[in-house]
Image 1 (cartoon, rainbow, N blue to C red):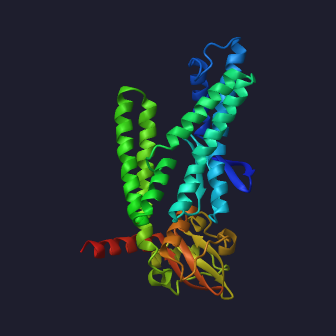
Image 2 (cartoon, rainbow, N blue to C red):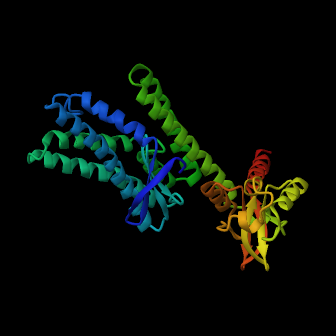
Image 3 (cartoon, rainbow, N blue to C red):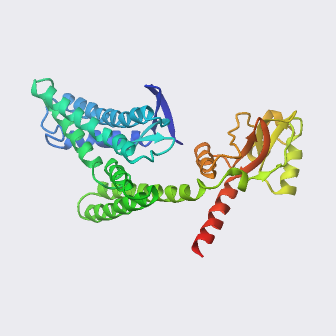
Length: 352
């Protein structure tokens, strides 16, 4: 979510725009300006109308992507899956779900609704063009929505078609194995697209890289989840962690960091967790009190939660450690290092 900003909420879903969108919009406008009908406005006159249609169509394409992603998000919410938001960026859009659906039928329906919404937009655009309402614009808009739907239905992970493929495979095998098969299919497709791009268009190479990296990342997360979801936080946390108080000086915390080699400490007052303080907080404020530099909004986890939940929270909030709280009391702390070591140890055991 770095280098992105919120433009509001739709149906309770936060919509964010990444700065890369402002790179691609002028490029799309340029391509639409020079491409002939029915994929551009090369033959449109006067010049001012040609420019206006090109810019409007470029913006409209990302509105179409937003509608596509909203359909995923809204159905996910109705299926009981929390949605953190939607982000629009250089390659389109992404619905950020808190977790991927594990039930095959649910994943298939959530994945399929995106291309279906694009097909519906294409049909509506063709209908509007047919009755004579700015036919050039709506034909071009309809064509791009049709391309968006067909492209996303390609059975290559992490595209919608790849998720549908995983859902179908998961009906006959485990979720992990289904993810691996769908990811390998996606990577093979990306390699083929990249080779084709060498002889045709550099855009295909960029899209191929996006698909390859996305498939690899999905496969890696599935492997991590398969290991960490079986492990409880209580089994890997550091119990009774070293704590600091709000009235300590930042310089005292720095001395503790030198002594104990930990770069973050829970802040406890009257037996309750009130914050967390890290090296970044105290490094430039040595004379300040901990209460003035600590982070008060602390993300916590329970001792009986899975280690994968900790992995997800640490990556989502970009923190190095999570205080472990039970019945309002601090009972331990779990760090990114704990999770990495757990994965290494379990991996070593599994490889024997």
